[in-house]
Length: 420
Length: 84
Image (cartoon, rainbow over all chains, first blue to last red; front, side, top):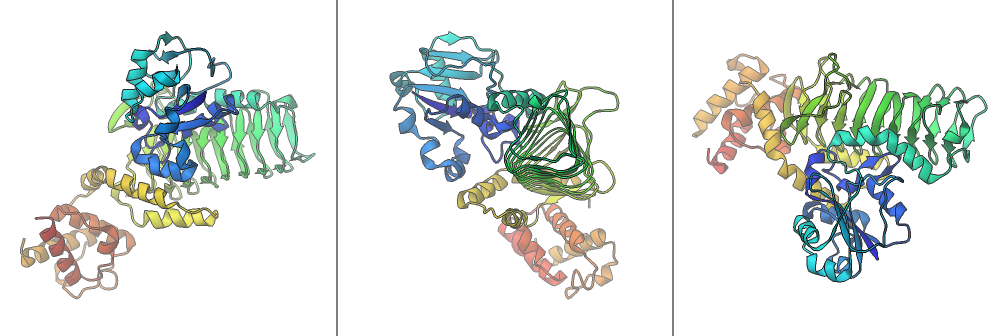
């Protein structure tokens, strides 16, 4: 029996977060979606199905044998799991148990369990066709599992996912690292895990009364930081006098200061300075300049709308911040409106006013006008080099292909805002 | 578009973007040293040329153009290649 985590055709609902990663590599809680699946089925072979365009990059990143490996997929009885599944401990999902398929109310496949013969018959390189074949072949099962469909879903579910990760990791009350005697913990220490190598310095306050806090390996929490659970701080992250309010997942290898609430920050992204980040999602290698601030609540307390796939969409949620793609940078003093979508490899220059609610990928935004990004690849490589990371050959090719795919979007916004 | 028309339009765009008088926009005028185009203005100029001529220009190559005369040649070539 094997597990195949698949990315279905709805990955573009999650742009710009999924430009540089498959759906299952989105972060929710302390871990990425796929890590929760791998953890549940520890010891079982897991491979992945991703969109064709990102496959070579993912093969470079994860290994060619585990990505879109048709021979492997057809070789065993298989549990197919949707990579958008938020697999928390309360969700029933068995490796063995007979052939069946669980389909959400909107038709999305949550999981499918099929024997080798059924898999071989249903297999198609087109994931949508294969899922359709499996729907035809398998008996229906009921599942209450949650599939992430839109970017803000990840932020909404993050506090719950942190609490779930904390329980599953099972190290509540364990202090392996350094908790300075002049740091204070409010609440029951069973709600706190400090991993080895972590250093919590004096005058840090960790409040676990409302939820657990995970401080992972080699994290440094500098003085005057306040952490309010639920919260998860990833490996090698540094917190600089941060007011880290509830519901955030950060890191690994981030540098974070200022006020942060209900935000998900992928690895190697920095928000070093003061400024508020709330109900937000930052992809990898993002840098927010000093005093960059986003709004996550409208002054009329109404539901927040934002641009998804070119259309303004009502989230139905009153607390929605910003979503920022990989390698994007903001300048000092950038102000982001409630529900702002910022693409990847963009440069947002604040001018004292609030930036537009949509900033395309591979663009520069200055004085409310858009321009094609300059030297974005060089900047990305330089930023990675500073952290002793290197851009892969396939990664670079993929980014260039994305740039080409998105060039009409940039062109549209450049022309719309260039007045002669 | 012939070279004279390209030159006339280039001058028109430079005057508007850099807010300078047309008599300064001569072929040998250096965008930075003579016309005061800083890095932001240079990016604005590239965007404005693309819109004015309805062409696409490779950013790095376009930004490497130093004076008005070379810009006219660069844009003329882009117009010819892109059928404008």
